[in-house]
Image (cartoon, rainbow, N blue to C red; front, side):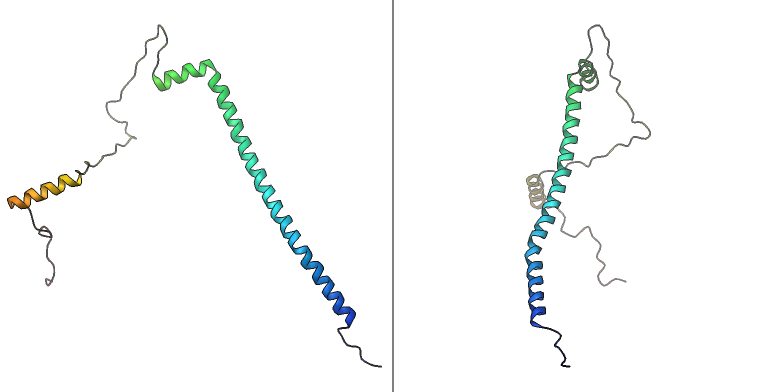
Length: 140
């Protein structure tokens, strides 16, 4: 009995057809996956925008409330109603938990510094560059 070859003509044609089908399906499958991803992103964005819209609607309802307007005017703008006595208490010293921020004095403009250095050089009262620093070269 003659030994048959492992790769027959029919098997080669079948392999080519399977590869052609796989390659022809690769692009549509990739597009399908990309479109599903885009749909998921758009749905997430829609949910975010919808939540923002609901928050803005709630804020608009709150702004239309006359009591909220009066309360906001009193709190933010220190308005008083007719017949009311309003006081604003100013704190003299900061509270213990409150820290104050010290701001450095603003640097003079560059032209003022330049003019002062020219005047100092003219009068001979200026200092040489590096004169205020210790020389450590050659010393142990």
